[in-house]
Image 1 (tube, helix red, strand yellow):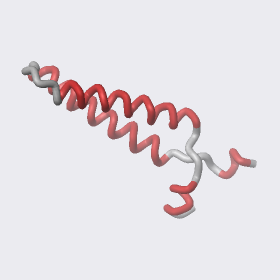
Image 2 (cartoon, helix red, strand yellow):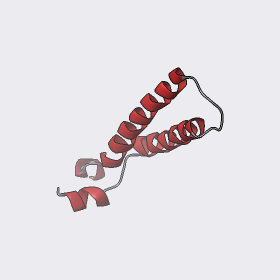
Image 3 (cartoon, helix red, strand yellow):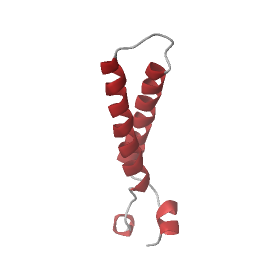
Length: 72
């Protein structure tokens, strides 16, 4: 399977849900960082780690596909 076939393949339902959860978590983190109030350094550090986790979840969710065996 090449890259074009992989991008056209369908994503399992679990990873679609995981991707949606990640988008919600990233939106919450963005709203915390852009809040017009001063935040503690610990809060900013936690949100930075949350961004890393959400990026990893996004990448895993996007590249996971159903194999041809599952279609048969």
